[in-house]
Length: 153
Length: 153
DNA sequence: TGGGATTATATGGGCGTCAATGGGTATATG
DNA sequence: CATATACCCATTGACGCCCATATAATCCCA
Image (tube, rainbow over all chains, first blue to last red):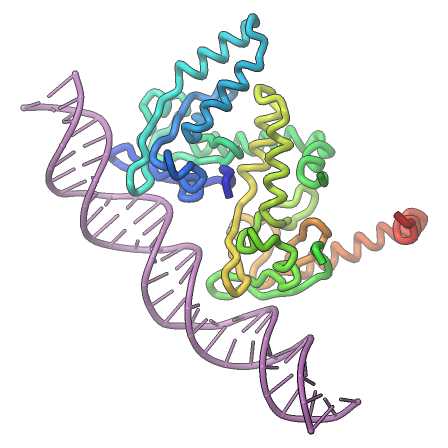
């Protein structure tokens, strides 16, 4: 599987290390297996992460915004300048920068949520609440969620 | 046959393993024969499953949404983080995550119901009851049932 | 076509490997 | 030299892989 899926709850040890879920590690290209990028989510108090290869895709999406709009600068600045790269050690652990932990309210434990081509890291309780809220919003429009899941190509 | 059809009742062993019905295994593409995805059904207390190929289609659809919209996150969260991938061992068995078992009320036995392009896993009694209810609902509208059964493509 | 033989499927269990976690020590970096 | 971080090793529990068995389905040949 080459997508980030499912959710995991891991602990941060005394040294600040936390395990990237094994299935997430397998999504990273073998070439850059030991490096990920992290940045503050624009839409929620969570951290988003992915392999370094995804940077190109992010750039493309931002480029698709109207260059002269306010959004362009805002997104461009908010995302690129906030990106940090982190190394994953031999055991599959990495360090979450203090600033990002603060942004997400993470202390001793964190929840990883697969999002397909990237993942989110949340303070566990907030993350679970966010999942519920998302689902509640979508269930209001049952048809569209069902379509996503069952539509045949 | 490349569709999930018929129903089967299998047991969960001490280790939590359960056999994926043989005919279901044969539906999975040879390339990804040993991996399936599972997720909570939207409209019933059951688990739905299918091969990983289907997940990639879903990913494509979500990817086509406006990346900076609220909907994107809602779909992405509700689908990717709720989906789990599970490995099918050489004997054709897999593990149902605890959370999904709870959702479906499954303890020591489970019922598999073919649904064409995917399948459902139910607590046996509830599953049977659901089948009856479905049929009863359909018979109330004989017209549409007759149409569906007799209509030629 | 009958009936024994072969194969497949569902299920049980032993055991090695891996993932998550903890901690000591070397190395780097300012 | 002090703090941070990478590397190495250890522990525990979960999971994957292998082998075994019983029942059911299929086959094959007289």
